[in-house]
Length: 288
Image (cartoon, rainbow, N blue to C red; front, top):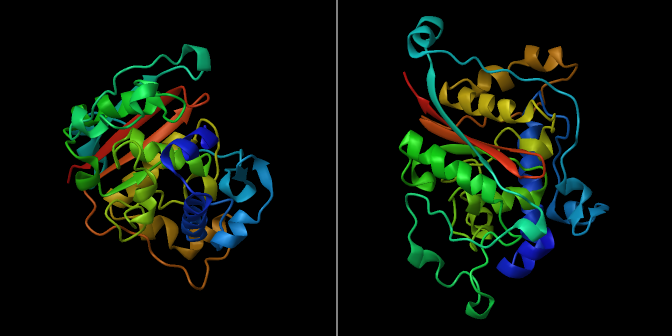
């Protein structure tokens, strides 16, 4: 998929490397991270090949971990917490068996129009979506989750996102799948600065899977928890307390920096299962 995406949408290896640099760096500020690091683009691109074209520092670590999030009815939520959030969640499924990936019309998100995609692929090739460039399951999940949550333009309305960056390429592919950029323009989400802390919709401030870890089963919940802490304005409480670092046998870095998004009200997270054939999208809304 990485090779096909790069050739179709002109994705450079340096753009992929920027995702790895960003996510490893954000993980540096998290006591929960297992792969934190301050790397340069050159260091990412000189790391060993894992599977062409992806390099070691572009891949997550399959590891152990646990996470939990308490779900309850509205009345109970306000009894238990002063900072409850509403959650809207939907799942989508689509095969990654090449022979079974039939072409179809793109399910449009609320802010998209058919006109946006009339030149997505060469006319002589015909309509190819999802081809082998996109995770259709992620698009299906976002299609339902946004409508459930009343999200009409994710880039404008979401204050942050946590994405399933098992590899740099899956992170970049998801920018189009969930509508942070139109299909075919995904690299611009990184190159524009929108994906960074302080940008329009920062992605993976936790460090993501690349910087934190991929504990299969716990990963998606942990991504949701990171979004929850941001909306509750508790990033510093759970990432900046030296005692939290010490509980993991670590020392808080002297140059620790807060990645709390100011006045965050809405966030979304994406979690893949299988080989990206089953995807969940969750939207959290501040309810206090």
